[in-house]
Length: 395
Image (cartoon, rainbow, N blue to C red; front, top):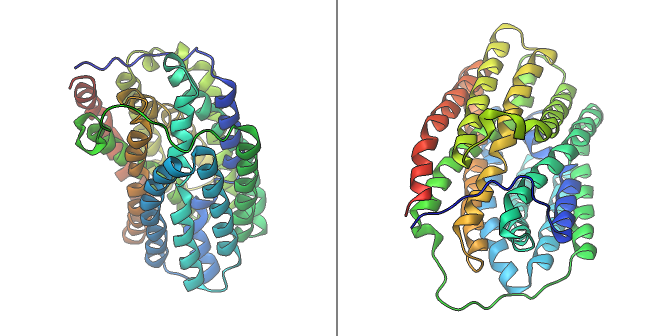
């Protein structure tokens, strides 16, 4: 069996898809906070780097059953209700984290946040595919990436402002955006049926070697990406750079992704099959991380980190959206939610491993060593894309 994966980057998306995309953009306004969780634990509660890494890893571990719960709930109460429930739970947990009186309470709130954090992902990703024609699906995921990046510009500014006031206020802001996103979904989308009946047995994504190949590659990327996200504030702090620069650099990365959406169709390196494009994305990621390693060793300052962030953001432009289009094409309508939920486990696994990886590398070595290790993994993933593509496109 041959799987045809189309490039439909210029297709339009439906009204329902645009509402979902707008809701995710609203949520993204406060979505910068998890990168600051280790900083909150270290600066706010006096935790060691290793303890902060373990608490953040507990959050990541809790996101794995959270995503599976989201897939199950969407079959029972419907996609819209599941999305609203998950976002409301996130808001409550964020507020608990913001007002936690001690490290133990903060650790408990982080675990609660993890249990709620991914509930809305499977229903929202499956619903985006369902309300979009197959030939426009890649365009829908690309539009989602652009909208999230545009919101990230404001998120970076908000992070820079609130970080100067206090890290706890970042989590309050995230709670507010979660609730706003929930309201957009609740009143902007139809409820839909709790479940859909389809003839024939359901496919098991865990036995599909095409999905497993994507999962392996996606997990490695997710670890690198989350080490970047969580490691940047810690790297700046270890280099004596103001924490406010973390928000400014988030804004720089977001502007890069938004601008990149307009020029990506003109770049020869980003044409061809999804796996050719992902290979180019991984190469850009490796170069950006390599530049960050040089900056960390030679001149750790906020402005010096701007070029690395621009380059790795161009790589992320491709890598955050492209794989979901591939996975959505692998499954039929009945199995799409299960496939996307299974693939999304990569982010739960990465959220568990990345804080430990980042804090361990920083405690044992330097920020330069952390960036260099990530660069080597990204380069290896670039080399592996031909093999991944061969597995995915042939049964």
